[in-house]
Image (tube, rainbow, N blue to C red; front, top):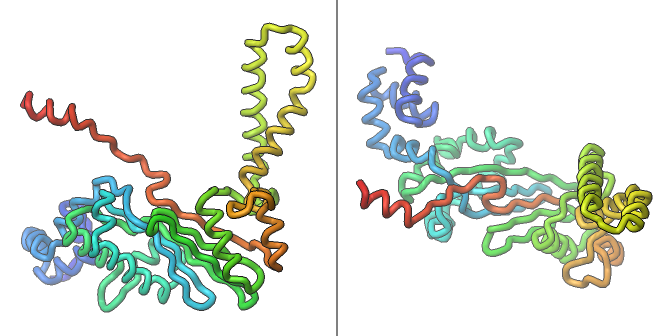
Length: 301
């Protein structure tokens, strides 16, 4: 019996399993939906798929470098405990070996990449079933460099934060130092030329409103009038301070605050070309459980 797209869609809706898994199940069961559901359960795929509505905001980030290519990616779990599990660590290392060969440009391309007959999405879901928690390959970046450039990589706390830098030059130690700085200080841009004008305008607007609100509470009329005349100048100062705090090369170097990052790399015949920083769970809204309320709810039930 031919397996149709509608049959695959129906099985996906009932099991939350991946499209390729649903197609395989239907082919193995000659199009019988009920048997295909059992087939997915037997393989552990359906069980893993049902975990996908949970929140996975823990985990680790990893960096793998091979020649002129590097891959930075984040693998999530539901709990920090599982992120320290040997199976999870083995999985993230294994995925690193696959991804550096595949060099995917998007997360969708990565999940669909086939290794030994299985997609990475399937490998992750199988691991999710074995480990007992939702596991997700959340994001990745594939970075390339020229022969005249050097990679710097740094992982903090085993991968809670991971950074890849690309520097013009040949000093690997400097590249790693800059990666460590980025991990610690978390700059948003390399320098002012990378800052979006719309964001600068937004910050200017916010600083102006903050000052205006402060002046509403100013009881000294003379001081208030003086500040009102200088409000544009004060905002300019705040913008300059914000830019210095946001831009990597203007920041005091974390290992020697007496020099800026710009001075440090220049003193070592290097120049920062790019950087990418991942921190586990950033941007994910985590569920906060109230244990006391949970217990009381069970008692009342």
